[in-house]
Image 1 (cartoon, one colour):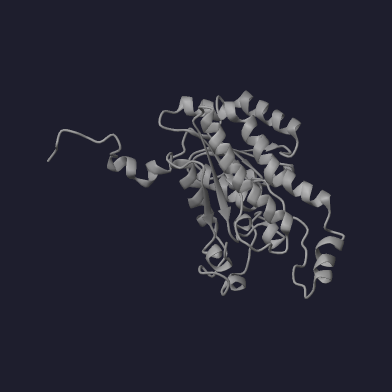
Image 2: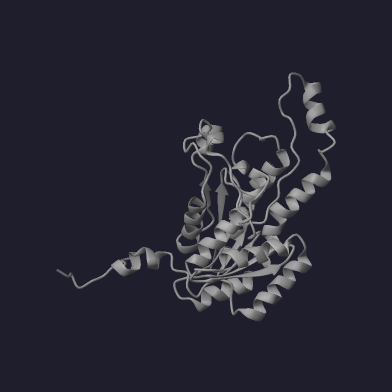
Length: 301
């Protein structure tokens, strides 16, 4: 029976189908650090679901390897572009290159990130702790600066440089808004330094930068959504310290069996679901989504 009226928010069964909810056909994406780890997971998720995905990074060999291995049996496409996102001139050149090929950029995933030198926080007296934190030859201002340059500043400069192309996506695709997904970390949310103060501080800064960008871009009248994913433990070259011939990294499940509720590291599928959710859901803006298997429950904020 029909009432003769339909809510503007009502959806048909076809619109609620998984093939519609996460359909990225005709969308153009750019993933920084797309050659390995979480960046590669995001690249695959987007390309499999129809997006044309440009991947950017410093290591051309790794980018080309991704195209060779993973640009098959996907509804979209993967294209490699070499760029250093910690340099304004490289970012400007990247914008020009995308502009020469595309009318807009629909999705920007700021994934490029680096770790930092570690320090020992366990100590029995103030002199020992001072020695560990200050006298440590690896604890330098340069280490802090380089970590922030990649993990924080690159997000700011990449997002701001691509604003016109992201807004063009909103204008070209009714019902869609250009979207940015920043990869932060639960390391920026937990109370522990986890033996690397500068890395955790940079990720906390990335979380807040995500919120500020979302607010100021909205205040400027642009319809561009800015969100962040804070991963827990996922296999990457940063966490596993290596990758295989498929540029995938591996962490033994047993290593985390007693650490937090999920009792395992994150999987490619876990990250893919999070990326697709933030990219596709037009009603999420300015948020940070923790995808951590309950790590924060165990570690405390």
